[in-house]
Length: 520
Image (tube, rainbow, N blue to C red; front, side, top):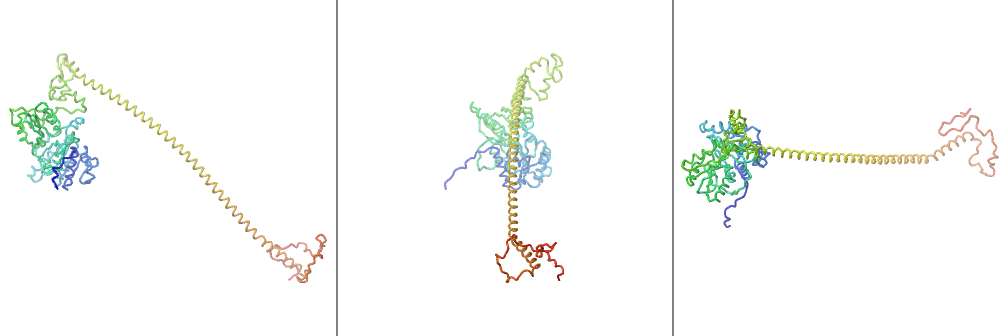
């Protein structure tokens, strides 16, 4: 057969690549199991583990209670026992509930045991803002964890890394924290079927360039690549460095890139104060070359785009206060306290001559708030009207159904009564016919027995007569039947001697014969 050429790349999403990495890990090593909140029946909060419970069963894909400290500690214990647990924490802010387990146990046990107790544990969590999940679910705390010695911190930014960096993370004897940016799950990319093992220790050059180095990681990589494309239209060649591993940081790759371009900008989504960008900038070891920073703002993320647009930059350059820097959210609020007197500032307040200016600056957000509230009221009124209409329609449908049910019940009762009457009429006719048949049978039996009874009675009468007048009756052979000798009915003489004595009655058939007087 001829050479079929290199394998074709398949297009997939970041989420599907991560799911395939989990599936491959569970298939290849029986010691690997996945545990976390809603990873089983629900398929993961972000759908990464969807279908794995049905494929590998509840022993390998375990739903846990809502106790990050509890199930992270259980993962540490399983790793100490020789298993390879993958612990999923829903979002990075919830990992703070397990910070004691991560910092004081997972990161330190190898050191405190003199190298005898490695903790091969992988902890996955979603990080980053941009999904309008407000202040509690929009953190980027990977820089905090990169400050802890004893653990490895990964920030997967591409489909290829999502598919192929889990296996070497499971093989690492140290705890590995994998940060998956929430905005990347739906991002699509090309994935080769056969890829060499990914190196966890080195950064990757995502776009070569000669004029400036753009250093970033995680969810900031797509935005940085888009910025590099825009710079290219202006004739600026930007090199994009994807750090991938935040601890240990590949400082050599950063320094080499800056040595080529002599300029650098660190793009970081974490807060400006204490973020990873100044540390990356310090690792360039090239003070004469300009290195800029573009971190996130020092303040809680907004819930909506409108609030974010009018919030300003708390502690990171010009904001809504006419170019003055605001050192924190509390300072932002205290600046609107009324002054004690004109021209003098109250504690934590502003001079009176600034109050009007500040109030004027508040007009746009207040107007927006009023419009938002008015729109919310209109939406609520429309929703209530629609709900009332649906309720009335439902009541009408219910009344119609009840009326139809009642009519059907009436018809059923009528049909049932008619059927009962028909059955009763039929039973009565059958009983009458049976009675007539029995009466006919009785008449037939009586008619058949009547001649026999008559013959019997006549026989008894003749016998009784024969016993009473035997001497007067000639023998059967001596009788001459002469019809002319028989007198007519009216001429027959009544012989008193031939009549039975007074009081003698004919014996009833079947009664015993009475002896005559003087007889034997």
